[in-house]
Each structure stands twice: as C-alpha cells, then as structure tokens.
Length: 353
Image (tube, rainbow, N blue to C red; front, side, top):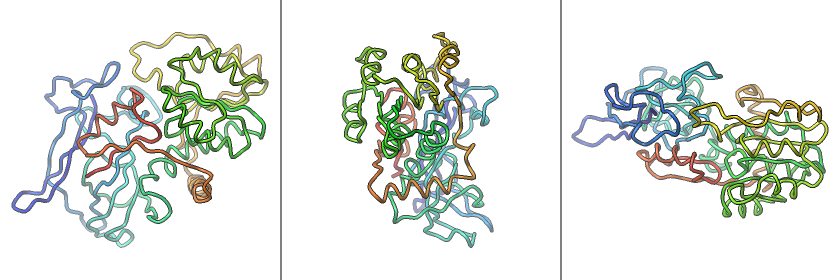
C-alpha cells in the first residue's frame, strides 16, 4: 500500500484542516505493502488540522511534489539504503514549499525551500534538511529535477563513475526520464556519441531534439540489433536506469575498460519474483569493465558543487529540461503510478493548486 496526503485549507468558519494521502488507513482492506505493481486503491486520503509552528519552526505550504521511481522500492520491507515507508503513514519525498508562517529567523515568510517532506499540503519544520532556493535562476520546480536530485544523479553518475572522454560512445537507458535526459546532454557536452533508449516514438523524437545521436524505441525495435547498428564501434560508457533486456543487450557491446553506472532497475521494481536473465560477470571480466552501483546521497558533500555547475550550464543554454506536470494535490497517486506506465517525459511532478 502507498502513503499519500490530500489537501489543506483554511476556510472561514471551518476548522483548518489539511488533506493528505497515506499508506492506507489502519482498517483499510489493502493494508499490506503492494505485491507487484501498485494500484490507486492502495492509497487513502485523510484530513487533520493545519498545525501551528512553535518557536524555532516554520509552517510550509507545498508548491510542487516530486514522484520518483525509487519510492517503489521503499514500499518493500527489508534492508536497503533508506528505511521503508511505513504502512498507514504518509509517504515523504522531494517537495518545493513556501514558508507561510515563520517563527524561525533564518526562514522568513515568503522563503521558498526544497527538502524531503511528507506528502502534505501543509507541514511544520524546524528548518533542518531544508535548502532555501533562489527564485530567479530557473523555475522553482527545477529544484526537484535538473537542479535537484535527478540532475545531481546524472551529474555524479556520469562524470564521476563513467568519466566519459571525447569521442567515446555512451548509452543511456530510460533516456527520456528525469535522469536520462540530463545524462545524455552532459555526455554531449563532453564530446561523446550518445545513444538513448525510450518507450515511444514521441520520446525518441524528443531525445533527437536534445542532440542525442541515436534514439531507439525499445518497444518496437529488436533492441540487440538496434543497439549494435547504433554503436558500430561498441559501447564505452553505459548509464543504466532500467536493467532487464536492454542492459543484457548493452553488455554484449562493451568495449575494453567500459564503465557502467548502475543507477536504477525500474524494469524489475514491480517484479514478484527475482528475474532470471544472462549473467553479466563473464562479459565484465573479459572486457575488464567497471560496474558500480551508486546512490546520489553518496555525494552529499559535493552537491553544492554539482548544483553550481548544472546551473551554469543551464544558464548558458547547454542544458534543457522537460517536466510532466500533473495539476492537483489529489492527483499525486496517479502521477506516481504513471511512472510505471511510461507516462512521463522528463521529471514527473505534481503542482499543488
């Protein structure tokens, strides 16, 4: 089951309440974590009074809420790099919010911040973990995308792990997603030949518009043949967002000393059994390739440097970004579920009315 929060309102004559989604009510029939692909029935909305900030706190109103594939993994029990979501409690994730009431000197009313916050229209914070963001450098929603976690994931995964060199061939799976479109453009900045895979002709066209040298619709192409044709000189760097059959095909094309950044495995996030496929160890061994999984929080001390560089490239027109914006706080679950149907191009976010 998935947590989510509905909306908050301060209507005259009514007790202030906020509506928020959560991981199912305590007596909800679907009270267990999802098996396979989640459904809308596993979310529930609840209301409560809008809280008042105490001394040293601020009241935040959500402006944009991020939905991300990694959240699916947090709906599973078991050890991971971050604790799982708790059934019956709100989901939390990236949120851009505005300070609407403040009892904290460092965050006056009107400040815009980004941080890991619960899916609520209103929430109280003591300011820890919040980053105040400028409103004149880029759309504030970009701090959930290009200038936020996805952009930094692309930046460190490609430039630190893959370390692409001019003239090399870079393959990006899930290339039309929030991370993938940034990876491809960064690789072009570094002078590489860039190949992306995506799930529709519209996304393929968009990737070519961004400057990708080749883009492949994996749903209609023979992926192994299409990749071999697109990369006649083999693959030097692979940024893996999806896993599955696409990754199997790329491994057949690895050059000597290839570098692979393992970022995501969305092809198997909803699997109820461990997928069985070709084992990659032999190919990694014979090509002396490097495979490294990573989490963007590994680079937390370097985030300011990454944001500064991404902002510079954006201001210079070297980076473009795309958002799929869903309107309405009550649409958060639908926006989240749409990730697994390929409904988004670029970053999927919800604009809170």
